[in-house]
Structure formats: structure tokens, C-alpha cells
Image (cartoon, rainbow, N blue to C red; front, side, top):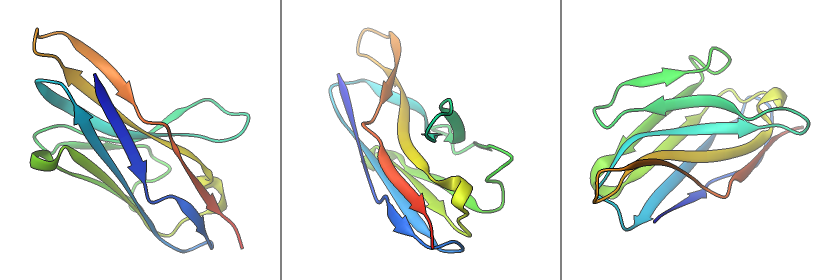
Amino acid sequence: QVQLVESGGGLVQPGGSLRLSCVASGSFFSINAMGWYRQAPGKQRELVATITSGGSTNYANSVKGRFTISRVNAKNTVYLQMNSLKPEDTAVYYCNAEVRTIIATLYQAWGQGTQVTVSS
């Protein structure tokens, strides 16, 4: 099983920046795509950004130009640099990974979430 541990959330003023990190550990063969999702109170969880093991990225329209996803494969770590934060970015942010096991099955792993609050 894979454990995903997020860090870097917190309270920031509008226009500020935060950097989220997520480290994967445990027993697995490889990790394919990794990504960040978020869920605001009363809303469904939504995709923020994803990145493949080869570095191809995908962003939600609402964060394009403000957020940057990156990863270090050797460290099984994915980052989310968030700039020009807005109050509507307030949510719990979840790390996600597509994990390939040693018997070649695939499953989705999730972190426990980290709170990001954008408020003056």
C-alpha cells in the first residue's frame, strides 16, 4: 500500500503564495500520474492539476497561469506552487497518485488532505 502525505497548507492573504508538497511512501512498483484535487465546503471534489511521470501537465481553467505542478520522480514527490491566490481557492487540497503494484494492478491513492485558506 502507498501512503501519501501532504504538507504546506495554511492561511494566506489574497494575492499571496503557498507551496504544497506530497510524498509517496510504502510498497509499490511505480507511480504513474500524480495530481492535486480540492474540495471546498458544500462542493464536489475537483481536479486542480495533474502531471504524468514524463512531465506532461494538465490544469483546471480556474488555476491556469497561477498554479504550477511539478514532481521529482526519484523522490516520489509532487509539488503545487500556488501564486496569486484568491479567496475562491480556499479548500482542502488532496494529493492523488495512480499506483502500479508489483503484480501490475493499478489503483488510485489519496492523501489525507491539507487545508488552504485564502482570506484577509
